Length: 343
Ligand SMILES: *[C@@H]1O[C@H](CO)[C@@H](O)[C@H](O)[C@H]1NC(C)=O
Ligand SMILES: *[C@@H]1O[C@H](CO)[C@@H](O)[C@H](O)[C@H]1NC(C)=O
Ligand SMILES: *[C@@H]1O[C@H](CO)[C@@H](O)[C@H](O)[C@H]1NC(C)=O
Image 1 (cartoon, rainbow, N blue to C red):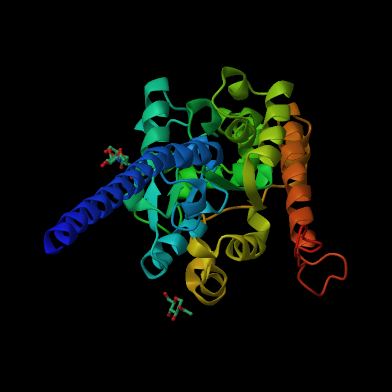
Image 2 (cartoon, helix red, strand yellow):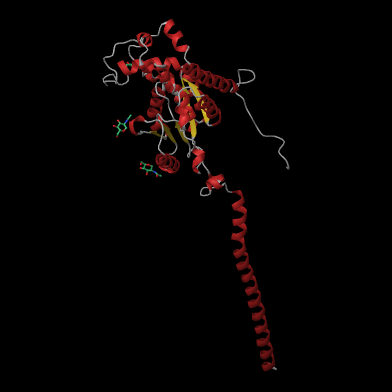
């Protein structure tokens, strides 16, 4: 009797063991199967949602503020130094970097190897981000380089004002670096006399600068009087630039930047209004040109084209300013999402 029970007992125990083991094995293999399939599932799902340009970070993790790169390809003598100096004064406080792009002999166009190096460098130089790069460099189209674009900004100035300013700057320097001897120091000929004598320094061809800066790196951009260059400059100005201000309205330019990109530009407006920086750089001994001189310059085709670009930029800028508070001119425009479906 006792023996029978023991045999039965052992037999029963063996069956329980077998069943338990079998079910464990089944469960385990299912887990393994699942874990073998899951990553594939994940892979196929994520590969459809990841932006190919941000395959490393993934679009959901892209930090727009911390990755911000603003490129200011400043045109000489447009008031750019005052603006850049605010950035230098506030970069530490706002925790961003300002970098000057120094090209051999102040060349405005970049060689092809330098284009590649520059574009890759500022895109990948993460220690510098957020960053404001500035330099006297013609527009460079980043979309040619299999790379994401920076935010372009610029400032334009009335072309004759800019030319006259530059003319006297080369002769007398400015209050920014008063002891630096300029290229034409000692030359006492006024702008009016220069125009009368038809000298090279006041040749309207010297005004061909804002158009090529906005037009870019193509040969045709640098052909004074090219209609194609003017059209290209206009197209780039609206399509490739986030904001283009005018020298005469620096405060509004700064205000729009601060509202749009506070990560870099916060506090700029306040600083510009309440520090001496706003009038920092003034060309010394600038004599306003006579009416006849202005009339003479306005006859030139180059001035007319440069003026067309300036007016085009001004119209665009005024429009951007107005859009902030349309339609009542009092309240900031708002936007929101609604009618979100399905619930
Ligand atoms: C640019 O670099 C050159 C060569 O190093 C230097 O002589 C020049 O002063 C620099 N230009 C500016 C504006 O700093
Ligand atoms: C960008 O260029 C600077 C100066 O040549 C260099 O120090 C830096 O390491 C470069 N950054 C990258 C990411 O290539
Ligand atoms: C402006 O500059 C002058 C002289 O450099 C100085 O005396 C004055 O305190 C400055 N004003 C402000 C608001 O910084």
